[in-house]
Image (cartoon, rainbow, N blue to C red; front, top):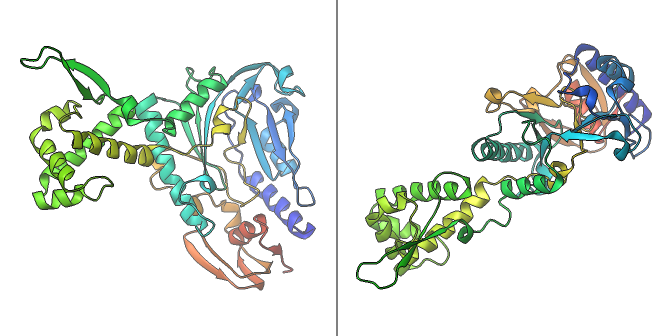
Length: 390
């Protein structure tokens, strides 16, 4: 990045911070603060081990320093400005989840930025469903990172003192890591009529957790099957690997004739039905888990982006999203700072670019071009353009 470009971005970040004053997180004076300035060269320098007292008034600091990135710690400390982690005196930490589109299944180098963010939002909704229904967390803040994904900050009192191992168990749960269908199934002894020894019935839990999720999907699939013509139902069952004509017939008849038992969680109504339940479970684990970044959640000292600040790699705002607005939130529209929407500016582009931003698609040729400032800042911040001469 040339100095002319860097100076321009510094100045426009300052203008943004003059107009917008980010809200402090809870317990702001107990947290460590860090930032990355607009330094020359390809690398970056993290300035950390600051307390809020060291920075002074947050709005004044941001306007004065106009940093490239701004962070605060998930952890709370006795002395957040101490120069080493041991000297800070750890008290507690938020439980933070990070979803990064680059790391999601199915995202490839050919995936567009808009497609990546849409895929990441789907993963976010899965994560929130798990946090709400399976854990019952009440204090969860959702944030668009300004870059490739989303953060969720959980601040329920019951999670703030969890150690790294306990946080790893939470990650394993939401990722459905090492969850096996057989481990969810409970075996119950049932006395058989006229039999000397009892038999065993295998059932799924119906009241929550991954077992409840699998059971709900299985019941829904059974309802779908029974509503079909038999020929169509058998054809549908044979779409699954390992289920041929005979097993499809067995599973279908079991589903049709044992719906009450299945509603109670019984998956032992037929060997082929048990196999079907196992297949459905694998689909549930894949569809309803959330690919969170484990190191972020398990790190009780993690620095995380400040909502309301700007992301120096995109020029977009790190945006807190009210839960009732999440469905309609579009990061490529709603995270564009208003400060950058009022002018056109000139940039120098070495290679033609195609970009979706602000609800529009832009095809920008190489060379000196004049385009809306928010598009120009996005390209400059990502290192794809330099500031042109007006």
